[in-house]
Amino acid sequence: MTHDVVIVGGGLAGLCCALQLKQRGVSFLLVEASDGIGGRIRTDLVAGFRLDRGFQVFLTSYPEAKQRLDYEALQLRPFLPGALVRHGEKFHLLTDPWRRPFAAMRSLASPIGSFADKWCVARLRSRSLHGSDEDQFRDPELTTLQSLQDAGFSNSMIDRFFRPFLGGVFLDPDLRTSSRMLHFTFRMFSLGSACLPADGMEAIPRQLASALPPSAIRLNARVVRVQAGAVSLESGEQLNARAVVVAVDGAAAARLLGDAISSAGQGVTCLYFAARRPPVEQPILVLNGERRGPINNLCVPTLVAPSYGPGDASLVSATVLGITENAERLLAEVRQQLGDWFGPVARDWHHLRSYCIPYALPQQFPPALDVPQRPVRWQPGVYVCGDHRDNASIQGAMVSGRRAANAVLEDLF
Image 1 (cartoon, one colour):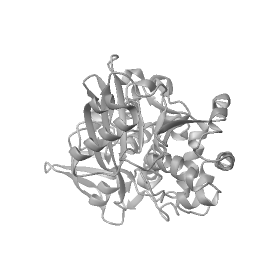
Image 2 (cartoon, rainbow, N blue to C red):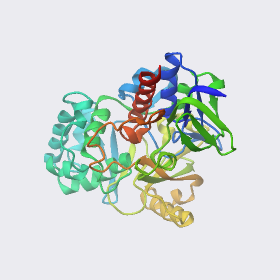
Image 3 (cartoon, rainbow, N blue to C red):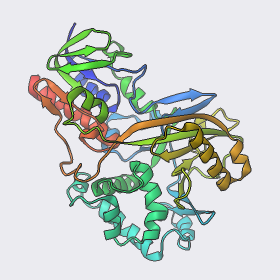
Image 4 (cartoon, rainbow, N blue to C red):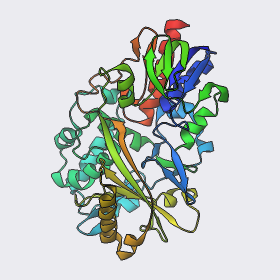
C-alpha cells in the first residue's frame, strides 16, 4: 500500500509531524516499534501508581506546546517553585523570590549560595528573559559551567544548587551542556510552571494522538531500513510512500540513516518507591547539594498530583544520573541514602520499579548548538526530526516535527 508520507516513530516529534500533515490534508501512516505512542514519554500503571518512564516535568511556557495542547484537559498540577536542597545533613528551602517573595526572605540566610550569588540569580533571570526565545541561541556558545562561572556564581552555589538542578534537567552532572540550553531553560522556568499532568506524562502524547485517525497509527511495527520512497519492517513488509520522515531519537536515527547523525546521548536511572507517608511536606523538587551518594534529585509525585497514587500511600521518585549494569547494588545504595536523608523508615519503602534509560536526552555539548536548528531534509524524499534536530526538550521535539512536516509540504505538495 502506498501513502503520501510514512512517519517512523510515535514520539512527540512524529505526532506533531502527523498533525501538521493532517491539517494540510496529506495522507500519512505513522509506524511505531513499541506497543504504544509517546516515545520516551510513557507512563505505566503499577500497583495503583502512575510511573513515568524516567522523572520528567512539563513546562507550561513552551511556546509550541501552547499551540498544540489543551492545558485544561491535561489537568496540569504545578510543583512549588524552588527546591529543597540537602546540604550539611539538613534540608534548606530555596524559593523563587519573584513568585513567593515572603517565603524567599527565609532563603536569604541559607548556606546555599551567598548574597552575591542570589544577586547573580536575578541578573541571570533578567538576561534570560531579555529578547525572544530564539535570542537565547544566538549568544556565543560556552559550556553551562563556564557560563555560570562567568556570571559570577561561587563554586559553592554551583555545586550545591546548579549542579544537581541543571544536572538533573540536562542529565549532565559535569554541566558540559551548551550555555544556550542554560539560558533557554532558565527562561522557560521563569515564564511558566513545572507541572505534572494528572494522568501522567504520557497524557501529553495521548492528547496529540487523539486528534489523529486511529487507522493512521500502526503499533508494534519496527522499521529496519529506510530509503527514498519506502521503509522496510522487521516483519519483511515494505511500506511505500512519496516521503519518509524518521522521527526517532538520535541513536535510533543514526542506526537507520548513518553516523552523520550523532548518536551520543545522556542516560538516567529512575527508581520508584511506595511510602506510607511522604518524606517531605511540599510538592517541591529535592536536590542533592552534598555530592555524596547516587541520588541527584528526588520528588514525591503524589504531592504534586495526587492521582499519581492510589490514595493511601505516597509515590517517591529518585533520579540517578547515568546508568549501571548492577541494578541490585544501585538499589541498595539508593536505599542507604534515603535512610540517611529521611531516617530508617525510608529503607523499608517498597521498591515498585526502576527504569534504566541509556538514551534519555541527546548530548548537547558545544558546538552541538552552534547551529540551533539542524536540517530536517536528509536526502530527496527522506526527512528527519526529533529533539536532536532542535534542542533537548519537549519544545525542541515538537518544533522539529512541525519543521519536518513543513519541509515535506514545501517539497512535494
